[in-house]
Length: 418
Ligand SMILES: Cc1ncc(COP(=O)(O)O)c(C=O)c1O
Ligand SMILES: N[C@@H](CCOP(=O)(O)O)C(=O)O
Image (tube, rainbow, N blue to C red):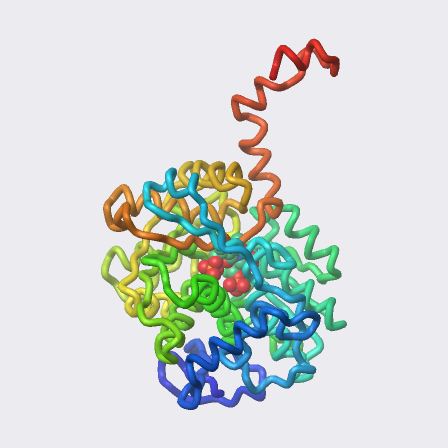
């Protein structure tokens, strides 16, 4: 395994903490697949489904050979992340206007978001390198995930979280795990810029998705989808786009699954951005190949308030490799989709619902055919953003109808309302 610069192809050793190449380009892990046998791997991954209380019981480390084969098992910091449900969601399919929708609930991860798939690998790697101080910039999920894993292996986490526009629950969760919180006026982008400039001075190991180990871990989401579908892929996979780590990991994972021979066909990827934070979509739509950051961000899907997505070049490769598309959705469309997902019994935070809103729009525009099957990745748990719930749950007609106007909980007053 080596690190390669995605801009100039320079190689770097993996045995030192490094985020970017000397030229400023992002790095990615190069794996050597030559000796891997697809059928043997399928049998191995299947057998590991029976593991209990070993690192291989994790839905990430089950695929260790494809993620970080060189890491000693003793260095693995795991909460048995992954192992999340893939649900056939009929009501959501009806809402979106396509034949079949499967919801991949990364919200079922131990800290409640897809970040755990990547964070277990980044923290394990940093731990193996002997790092003691871990850091990230975050809109709340990355910080919760990092604080959880750092606590679990007895290390310290320093998390940089914008003063405004971050769900309170995520900040409280981060603090509860013992994360050292730095609040600052600005955005995720400002926090990340600060860390990239100063992490070395402070001896901090950066666990944002600019760290290529995060991307290696997040590949496991598509590995797990493929295994759950018995190595036969859907027509589409739909992801929300913020920093674009998921889009990057999805593309890399799919490319590797195909190269090894674990899957034959690659699904198309749709990246959905919120209208108020859509620099990547605007670039793609304009047919440009340089991203212009968006300084003013305004979506109530607060996890997506990212104006300068670091992984945009990797996400562009994903689009190219999968014949993918981008689309934007309004906050109204996001919340309409969220209500359907919540009512279906799965639930998610607003950023995740952007997938189903985007799917509906793409189906309406006939970019996605009504007879096609889509997997939507639900990135975060319903309870992550209670403010968003308060925004609509108390105002539904049923809630008004059932409110006890007489303030009497007796048989007769309840009877009149049911
Ligand atoms: C819940 C949730 N969904 C989606 C995203 C966007 O994912 P990505 O940054 O990988 O594009 C984030 C954070 O970035 C998030 O926290
Ligand atoms: N939504 C994310 C922001 C992107 O973080 P990164 O981990 O991809 O760098 C968050 O929860 O912080």
